[in-house]
Image (tube, rainbow, N blue to C red; front, side, top):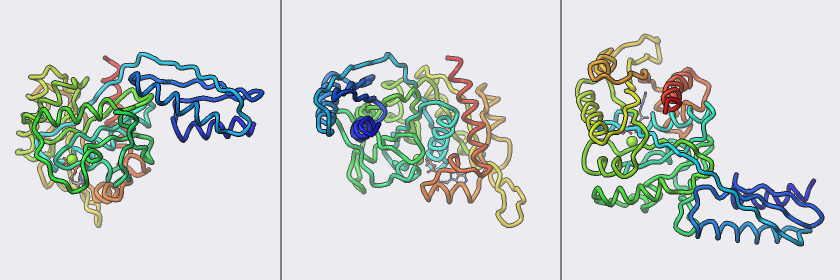
Length: 319
Ligand SMILES: Nc1ncnc2c1ncn2[C@@H]1O[C@H](COP(=O)(O)OP(=O)(O)O)[C@@H](O)[C@H]1O
Ligand SMILES: [Mg+2]
């Protein structure tokens, strides 16, 4: 019925995925899911929904039924000992691949030094809106909503973050209105300092994925990252080796500029699972720069990320 469609569209614009409307004899019955929202945010959303429904032609009465579920939302931290190893690239594509595997996934970009998720997910320059004090994640073309530290500061603004400050800002992102999301992938700042420790202690991720390149130095840094999580009592889901082997775009020959097998051996020595390798490929860098993550495409890289997400998903099911 056209009226149902009109009223539903009005509510979707306002409370996507939370409100379901039915119109009968001028009476609109709306079921509003307020899971995860605080008192004030609930009241405000309900008022907004009422107002929008009353404004639809032919509506004479509005009834709103609030529902709420207890939901466990798990945080998966993606971390690395140093920058430039592809942590953000892995976090974005892992989130998309987990979503394709049937989870409801959101992405939190906690990298205060260089928030890169808005660019990776093709929503650069889109700032999150807020309802009262609750941030509303930015919808991305890949079905993975995003909140980024980048959205909290003006573009190009340099800030000297202290650990507790960064931990507080992260709280705003983690406590955003994530709706039905059951899993949040957290792109942590690189390194193993005070900022990272505060973030981890405060938000207790369910587990951590460590990203490293095959280079020795990167692996030493990865070991420090692993220690940091161990100290905080956070389980390590496993190690991903990124930029593993280079496939020449001209002849297809695979070479290993940073050596081979180092990460897998290191994982064995550290007694953590090895989740797999992501090759160093022009296509990955190009797609990432263009805001079209390879996991959302249909190239061979998509399968690489699907396999990684499969392992992370298996791990999540053991909790
Ligand atoms: N497997 C890969 N193949 C090719 N380029 C990659 C790969 N992983 C990451 N990159 C590129 O390397 C650069 C750094 O990656 P990024 O994810 O930003 O690292 P980090 O978050 O660890 O600093 C980016 O330009 C990215 O596109
Ligand atoms: Mg990064």
